[in-house]
Picture 1 (spheres, rainbow, N blue to C red):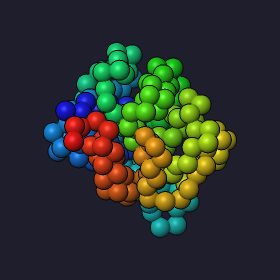
Picture 2 (cartoon, helix red, strand yellow; picture 1 turned 120 degrees about the vertical axis):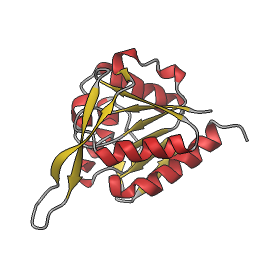
Picture 3 (cartoon, rainbow, N blue to C red; picture 1 turned 30 degrees about the vertical axis):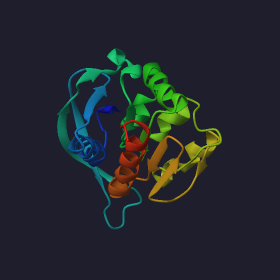
Picture 4 (cartoon, one colour; picture 1 turned 60 degrees about the vertical axis):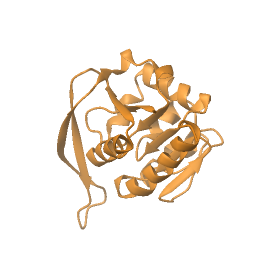
Length: 187
């Protein structure tokens, strides 16, 4: 049975944390949420308002982290999920987060990343030559890290499954579940 690590923190997008967590648990798989500290994190809800140039942010649900990022043993997990929201802007500055991302991408283990999550992969130097999608306003960061941004709801590139934001959750998780079944679960 797959064991999945999810990395998030304060200001993580609620729908991008809760939807994959429950969708993967629905499969009977274990999902452990790691945050900068083992404590309750505050998620946020991003939405769009007519006439606004960017999204709005409101407080979302509070969630208990299962463990601190410093305590993660990446080799114990079969897959990694990196939700978006503003959390990745902060998380990319934690060396252990970059180490974890490198472990999954370089070892070929399934990795699901959405919205601002690719900021972590960019900071870890993992995007060179990769094709992916993300929140369109993060495209300059993807390009600066020598990745190729495409504006599609989901992109599967070897062991990496990316999506733009919470409104792409269903196709994002559909492709990630397919990948997990093909690589982790016995036939």
